[in-house]
Figure 1 (cartoon, rainbow, N blue to C red):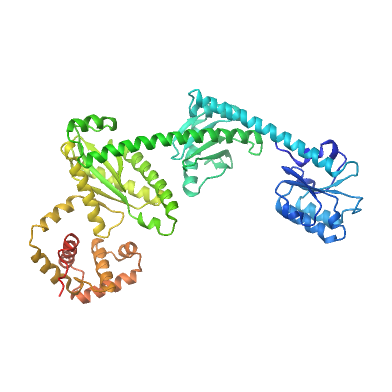
Figure 2 (cartoon, helix red, strand yellow):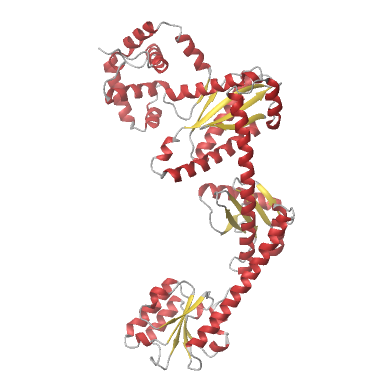
Length: 559
């Protein structure tokens, strides 16, 4: 039970006290009581505190009492008890008017009891209430803990909490998966609330207890009220307790019950997280061995891979993906904080990749190796139709990652492997495809390994011939000597790779479109041609591509 000012006035030593102003504030919560002997007491008062005073320190300063009332009301104090007929005969009218305006209670205290006696009784009553609350909290915590110790899971805890609150309750994890719900839940009403919560969490961080109302379409001004209580753990894993209906959020027993349930659930979330991390680490170690070719026999691959549903009969493609802006993440943040936030982001990305791809691509396995997220996808027979399905799934995933958690991701796709022993080759192909995209200054791309085949063809041509073609095509831009020409080459490369789209080039390079136009015109002047026809653009793209795969061998020899 919360102690209110009205409850304090019912105590024996306060029964003859009179409320002379601010009666609308009698419901103010009283958490402590203080005495004033010094004029600077306001600096030591706290929220929800009742002040008792004889006004001795301000008896000769008529304005001091007005100032004290204003400051106490602003600070959220519970009220002011003044013992009149000693140092002040009566409370000034203007002070009473201001207190009424502020709904700040002023209580006139008779001379029957000393302030010390009144202070002791009020504090004793508050202490008694606090003791009851602590006993209640301890009993509730013990009840929830016993549920866990006896083998009960989230469902039993939520069922017990629903019984205490007499309201339906649902538990979500930080991914908004349903972990448990009470038997008296209205599933139709819940799913309406679920999507509302889903939208709210993506637009704001619900990290404090909130009571929300849900507009229900087609039912006029009717609203469904519910409460959301976030669960925070030391490793930032979050969950949410959703409570249907009016929970009387200001009623302490209900709040304590929810808090204790959240405490016990948070430990269970931490335990689940530790198990998931351990399982994921074992999985990553196995697949790291696999893609590095460190497992000697196919039989061992099959036996160890059974736990992850790796099947001998399927043809596998490998997909590698990486955060485009990972290095930028560390620029303006303390290294330790940046590392922690990056770890949380990578966990979130892993969860989204696994969740989305396992739904769309049946035989998919997700693991991480270094800073790469890697996916193996198995097919009975891989063909162009299956490739189209993969590209559509990756495009959707890429878009969701970008819009949901602001993460720009790029993907490299391998050719398919005929057997499990060829998976290391597929992994290297996917890595090479990813690197090829980055060499072309692309961002948020999906690139297949076929680009590697073109590179292999060029490598069969004598380097001297390639060098002559490169120099004759790019002329003064072949070996840029200053920053201006390096910028021109970079802009030209991005411009050509994006089908000569000025707006897209400006967006990728984070420069103004007029700067792109100026640089392209400058390139045309130096190259002696207009970058319009298909022949000219193909020749330039070929020269730039040759440079990307032979950049060391094509460097201009020193004079």
